Image (cartoon, rainbow over all chains, first blue to last red; front, side, top):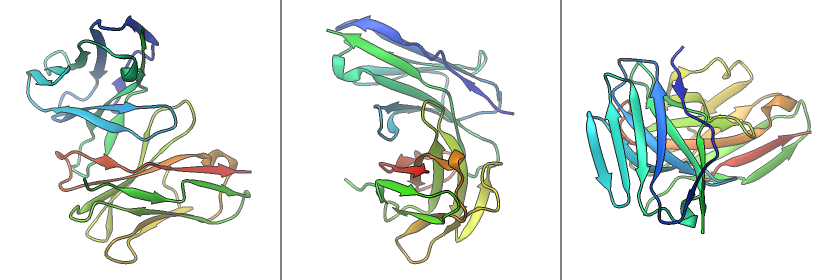
Length: 112
Length: 114
C-alpha cells in the first residue's frame, strides 16, 4: 500500500516568516510530486509540481525533492495570513492511470 | 482561464436514493477523475477514466458507483443506493496526460446522505 505521510499540524508561524512543510512517501519508484493548497470547504488548488531532485522555485514557494530519502518539502517565504490553509502533498500511484495519492495534509496558520 | 465545473454544489438525499454528480472537465483534457473527501479526512481516489473506459478504480468504487461520459462535455458519477457513509465532498478532476501531468480540480459537490 503506497503511502504519503504528512504531519497534520497545525504549524503556526508569524507573518513574514518562512513556513516549512514536509512530506514522505513510501514508493521509491514515484516520479511525480505535487503540492496542493486547500482552504476549508474548498477544493485542492495546485501550487507546485516537482519531478527532479533538488529545488524548484515559483515566487514565494520552493519545492524540494530528495528521492533517495523519499522526502519532498515545501517552503513558503514571507508567509502571509492568506497562506493559512491545509497543504496537501500528493504523488502518482503506479500504473500510469493518473491516480493521485494524497497525504493527510498539514494545516498552516500564519499569525499577523 | 479554463476550469473544471461541478453541479450541484450541495446535494442532500435520503439513504437508499440514487444521486448523479455532474462535472464538466476542461475542454481539451482527455483524462478524468473522481475523488472524495470525508470531513476531516484525506482526499481519496475513486476512479480514473480515459477513452470512455475506466482506467483504474479504488476499493471504495464498488458496484454502487458508476461513471459515464454521456456527451462530449459532461462526466458523471452515479451512486445507485446511497449510504450514510457516502456523505463527503466529491471532487472531479481532469488532466491532459495521465501519470505525469497536473490534475485540475473542480469546486466539489458536498453530498449529504440522511
